[in-house]
Image (cartoon, rainbow, N blue to C red):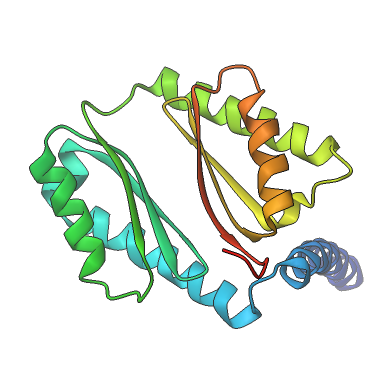
Amino acid sequence: MKFWMLLSFMVFTLTGCAGAMMASTVGGAVMLNDERSISTQLDDTNADFSIDSALRSNNELRENSNVTGISMNGNVLLIGQAPSSRLRDLAVSTIQNLKLGGKIHNQIRVGNPISFTTRSNDSWITTKVKGRMLNDKNLDMTRIKVVTENGEVFLLGLVSRAQADLAVDIARNTSGVRKVIKVFEYTDAAN
């Protein structure tokens, strides 16, 4: 009986290890292909957690707005809706107080938070844009982050101008996309 329990435990543990190894291998390949240093990638991940925590810890923002932030290469993109310019400004100052060091791209729209249906549609648009990018052999999609908010597609990444132009063209020509906003940083010498 003990043998079977031990064998079951080993199989379960090894299965988990295989999944973890596969996930870390895929994640590692994406990390190595990224133009950002591994340290910067980790800083961005930590900044994402700090941004989320800061926005959620403010009761007024949490209860009345729909604001999120994404960090890329030390810069922050703020998106979503706030019912007043005062709340929009409060969200921006909340993130500024984190002193993350980079530029803050304020793309918060003044208006009521979007519905669940709209958020679901945004997820579908993001999936379509990413799928089309993945199918384009001339585009390295691993260097581009795609975020959709209320039909507006935000493209972030550290890429060449040619890659940025290709990504914008793909996103712009995807059904359901109302607007494409570039938040790229360029690896080319000419900025």
